[in-house]
Image (cartoon, rainbow, N blue to C red; front, side):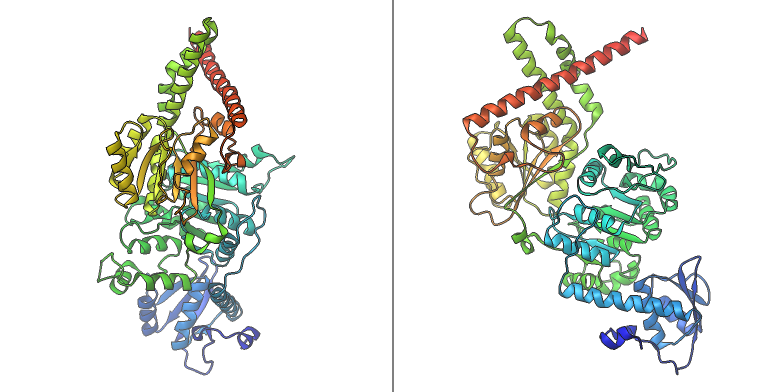
Length: 597
């Protein structure tokens, strides 16, 4: 018995087999497959194949267990009933000791979470996020299922940075690619890939270490530390990704893999099997039925819940049924086995500020944007030749309004996708926008959530009915105009989303306060959705928005006359920058035409 076993009570299934009992076969380690191979009498092989669906049972007379801690525990348990001769005794004993240490420490973490200080990070983590980091570092194949807005992204990045699990792959929804790149640059000092000659570190150097995979035709991967791909491409890229030797893969919003039988799911399964560290992130791993949890967890750790037939027979209401009979029992099992960590907002509310403001980068349709601003580009090119002061002012306002609308419309479908994710997590959402065309797109794309709206076009009866529907729980989504929110009491909302920006900080602060009011018992989370197209960049600067975090200019106090004048002056300066960009676009187009003629 080892010193560890003498000092620490361990689970009975991890104790060594009796050396004096009969031997039923042998177990040996196979280096090429990184597996433990059991060759034994038929009764042992047959029982192992029935008990352990995760083992490789295709070969007659043997079973293979991948060499990991979970399988080491299962194999030791089998050997207590049917002792085996161990060909690689020293290696087996080391694997068993490591499994004991892992299981004992996991139980301690479950009883009393222990924060871990992250390494290589640019931002300070909250205590509960440091506890999440400790969990991820100890359980290298697991699901982080924290509520929306508790920082799953930063905890995942902290794990990569602290354990230096590079190169790593992030698999995301299409509209979240830009945000992951920005969040990585904000939070992590991205290490240099092998053979990179580092003269000095700056944001460009860091950005070059992050590669976004594009297109369905695989190409040679460039030297990078972090790779980002969206779910729609992983099937086309699966062979190249499996060969890449990633140290970790993070499946963001892993509920995208809740349906088996698809090429996307098969590719994700192969990718997970090829990687030693696999983390799933999702506040909503279950959309419809509890059986979806099997699909998600099967990607995180293959057959950790058995095969589908066994899972449905024992956990659900019968063979092939998707409805879990005892959901709480399944949740307890996943937590106790180090397979899932979940914290709700109400559990960590004391660590959260009353209002949290986050700039969320989303994509936009550049073709739609380019088509919508053709007239604005033309007018910008003509602006300098207009002599009449009033006409110049009118044209300037028209150019900016057209560009703002083009910005809003081009990103509206992606904003709707983001809101859909929030609603799937049962959040109560106020969606603010400015242009009616943006409202129309969002209403159409989110119609299955029965949204209501207060946009300034409704009469008082319609406005009151929409507000009542939201406050009474008939819908979890209310669309509100940025300029029509004054005086509304909507404290049922716990998330505020700005699909479009306004030039005035006070407008946004007032909109946030529709939810952050007396009677609000939650921490209000405000998302500012920004894209790299159109006016967003300049409006961010005018509002005091940094790349990924809201700055204190949007404080919780009324805007003074002086501050209003300063804000107007800043907005005017940024408006001129927008017009300058449109002029440059017009000149570029003019030069292209001249070259072609």
